[in-house]
Image 1: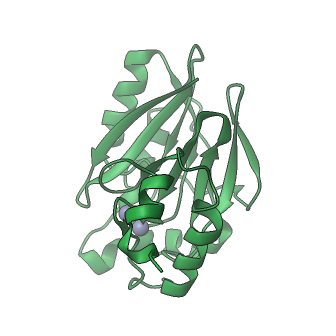
Image 2 (image 1 turned 180 degrees about the horizontal axis):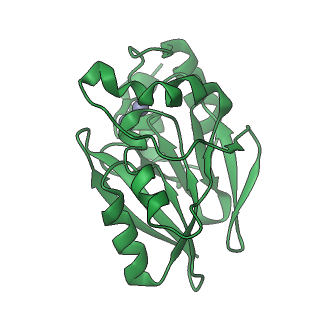
Length: 211
Ligand SMILES: [Zn+2]
Ligand SMILES: [Zn+2]
């Protein structure tokens, strides 16, 4: 069973997820958005060691806490990212365009690819490539748990913005149709901003996906 600790952090109110298999002391962080010390504190409290940082994409508001999480973990966890977002990572995730300066933390050393399997304890997750919000956006799918960590691909009744560098609307809609709507209705969508939703609810009510 998957344990999920959710934080909403930083200037863009970004959701960050600290996750571990129940009974295991090895955790991962999906999108250490901001305030890495808060994430570290929650891990400490549970006796968890953060062994991996998995990024859905390289926008600054999804990785602003990576440096602090890495600094406070021994050994520092490797950072995983899809290579098509490396340019964005090197550009501080676009922070300067918002008047911000961030330390993006340790350079990504794990290249994510569509269909790749990752492990959290005994739990298997699959990397799903879903470009459009950014060129190298991925989602993390736990099929046995009916959980999809979908970053900024799809939100409750909305979708990711495509007006930032590298964004493309048609590509995003295509990603949602092929990688999200193909999953079972009961799949939980834990996204980058706002409340949790499900595939079934979005299939029926998301205004961007009708017709
Ligand atoms: Zn984003
Ligand atoms: Zn975001």
